[in-house]
Each structure stands twice: as C-alpha cells, then as structure tokens.
Picture 1: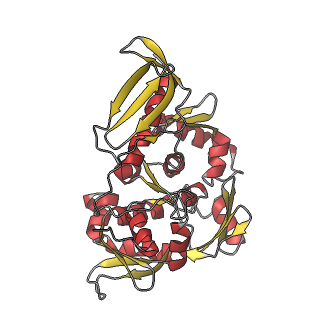
Picture 2: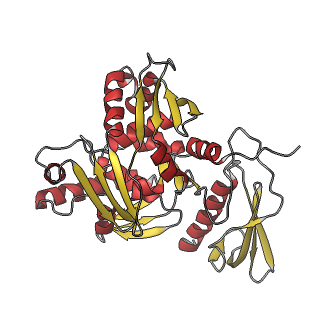
Length: 368
C-alpha cells in the first residue's frame, strides 16, 4: 500500500508541531532582551519617537516591528509555553493553524502553581502579540508584513477552550524558514531570571555548530541598545559574570576577561528544514510511522578531524562517519580502523547526527 503524500499545508502543520520558533525571529530579535519597558529607557524613547515602531538591523537581516507595546522575553516565554502545552493543533480551511490550550496548564508551565489561574494576564499577553506586525527584510528582499497571531479565542467561544489562530502570512513565512525545537529544555530556559541572558541563550541555540562571538556582536544580534550609560554597561557585565554557570548549562561558555562567547552546541535542540529546502526533504507527522532508512548517511564536517581515542590510547584521523537511526560507524586512519557510536537514546536521525558531530567536535577540542 502506497503511503499518502502530505499536502504542502499538512506539512506546514507538522513542521509547526515539531517547532518552537523560526531561527530568523530569534536572530533578528522580534522579542526584545528585556522583561518590561522602563519608560525612560533608550528602547522606550526610540519606540515612542518612531511612532510605535521598533527598527532592528543585524547581520542576519532587518525588521520593523509595529505595535501598541514592545514585545519582550515575557511574550516569547508565554508563546513558547502555549506551543509546548497545546491540547490540539488543527489546520483550518483558511490555510491557518488553530492552537488550542488550557490556560491554567500554560500559566503553570510559565509561572508555577502561584500564577496558574491568571488567565486574564495570559489573554493580555496574547493580545499584545496579536496587535504587533512585522515587516522583514532579508538579503535585499522585503517580505510581506505579518502578525504572528491573527486572532485570540476565549474559552467561551465555539471550541470550548482558549486558543490562538496563527496569521496566514506568518505561516507562509514560517514554511520557508529553518525552524528550531527547544521544547526539551524550555523549562530550563524559563528558569533564567535575566531577560538579557535568556535572549543570549535563545540566540546561541539557533546555531547548529560550535561558534565563537565577541560580546559586542552578540549584544547587537539580540537587540541590546548600543548607546547606554556607563552604569548600565557595568550592570550588564556584572549580570554576565553572575550567570556564567547558567549559560554553561546550555552549552554557552563566557570569558569575562576576553568578553567573548564560545558555544559548544546543544544536543537537546533540533532543527527542522524549510519545506523548500534544496534537498526537497519532506517533513512527516510524528504520529505517522517513519520510513526506515537502510542506507547509511554521511555526517558532514567531521572528515579530517584529529581526535584522541582514550580507550585505544591512540590518535584518530577521521576519514568518514556514516550514520543510520541505530548507530554511527566511524572510519579512521586511512581505513585501517573502525569504531561505532550507538544511538542509545533513540534520537531522531537529525538529532543523532547533531549529537555525533558535537561529540567529535568536543574530542577534537579537548583531546585529553
């Protein structure tokens, strides 16, 4: 029996089910690195001066975000909690996605038991996101403006549950983007007290491979104001020093003397390709049995690494790594040796590939 081919929009729904956000909306920070707006802050003054528009320009693109309020890490946190705790995700005839959720469950995930009954505040946050539009420019291409949320649904409406309907134009943007899934570590992200540290962590999680960046580059990337007082700069540096261990848990190492970051990667983060990726891979629903992969696939970026094998007490020059869903087979030293790495956690093929790459990258960096 031939497997039914999913329509494009069914693939969009499946991609959404597997995602936390697009990489673009975390690298061109739709959500500011703050918890709330101080009326006299640089960000607030510029927002008011520009008529309720927040202009962003980073190495990854530009955006103009217009709304009644500036979207913050609080809005991102709550949206993440809605996505991660959805009771139902439906595709509508209008080519939009309906996300239903229990307000008490979402608020418990966000604020613990104390905040679990604050549905009124939750609605306020969702409406602020609904009322914010984004105009995005990437590589000299201006994309159609969109709202992330088109409509908020009260529990008293036809569905008998709280819900949001995602904007059709946002979904058109979403389907063509690389997306990220950090639901496994969402509770850890929510436990970070500093909005700036939270934004830094989310930004680094969008990188598949190990990277190094200077502090000034990262601050610019997350939308941190470039012109702040000396006192604010000192408070920021103190905040970074105090959160070195917190960031380390996510694979982010910070050196306060060099004012630089090294990101090691994070095996608990997955990436979902664009539905129009060059390799034309199709995204399958989680509930649909996956087609077994019998031909090993190569893991790119490992060939040529020199690693120390402690068990064999020898140096390994990696020739190639072939991988399937059960194990990775490593060929080294001109084909004279082979080793295997088992997928003991039953990770997806993509996540296992990332795990294998990061494992060998660490062996290369720390041969002892």
